[in-house]
Image 1 (cartoon, rainbow, N blue to C red):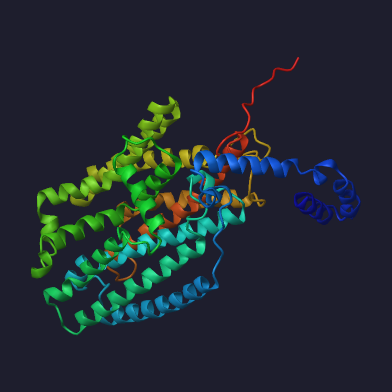
Image 2: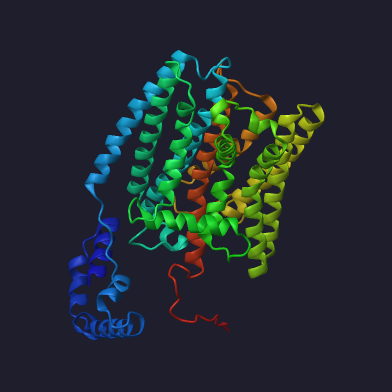
Length: 472
């Protein structure tokens, strides 16, 4: 009955007619409205579920049959605002002090820029990515994209966009606060091993929080994240589901973070921070080789996922997708080689391989992942079904994705922003890739949602075995 009321209310609003009262009289007198058969069927289903799936525990059964949606808390919004203000204030203070000390210029403190700055940039890129995911959740909910079903999240335990924003603002306030205190000590002349260890301790604290076994700090979400990372690392030994390859795609945009993590692990594990020998991990051959491996890993994992999906499903498209990640690995390898040997030969190879990889990736982004550029669709150059009403947004999004895909050109032209250290410039370029990935995420799930709806996959189980019926 409530459904009819809502439908008729919407109908009156759209058509500017007033038929709700007339139609509701017919609905109210209908048999289905006065019959209790539906209620009795619901009771029978609940009884069967309690008996066979919950061992007679009705309370446990109701958690699955009628899950309570977590209510939005005003306190969450308050703390988001509080920590946002704290982060902005601390960040401005940090930037002013760094500018006065000349930390980010080309004549900066080499030890600080090589050991402490990577910690700040790594956290910044990670939480920027998480913030973009929060924006994705907000837009998916607003446009009614069923991301919960697509990712197979538990509705009562999934992170809402406010939770994601709270995690980002709180974490970055802590990070910038600690780095501000650390920079203050450096500027005042303190350079003992204890001071040098502060960024490493900050990183260790966050890693311990991630694996904390206690039921605090969104434990279910943290453990789900770790489970997905495990599935990615052990690819192709696990069956690949949507959330696994979606997360692997995110890792492909976080290669700078993984490289910083590898360097910092070497710096602190080998106790180089005690002697401030920041060049040790770049001089030792096996650590340099490890940097190559880390740059390849996300693309390798994604390629292995494609191989596993082809093995399970037999769809040749997965092999074509695998080729895309092989081309990305070749592009990453040539860029690393060019960093170590700035010869004309390597430069030519970087341009050729990266251009081919970029064209490959753009085709897959637009045609396969986003489902666009369908020439025969009713929306020219787009697709038949669109969630966003303004078609020009799709064209602008394709243009933006194209521009951000060309970030590899910085390898060739070596851009410098004034007197800034090159590592700061590289951070801004890495941030652009993270933003591109967040932008890509929305359209990827939009296409997945429309495909699910078109193939009757908007629910976990299709209730009837639909068969095609040939018409005479």
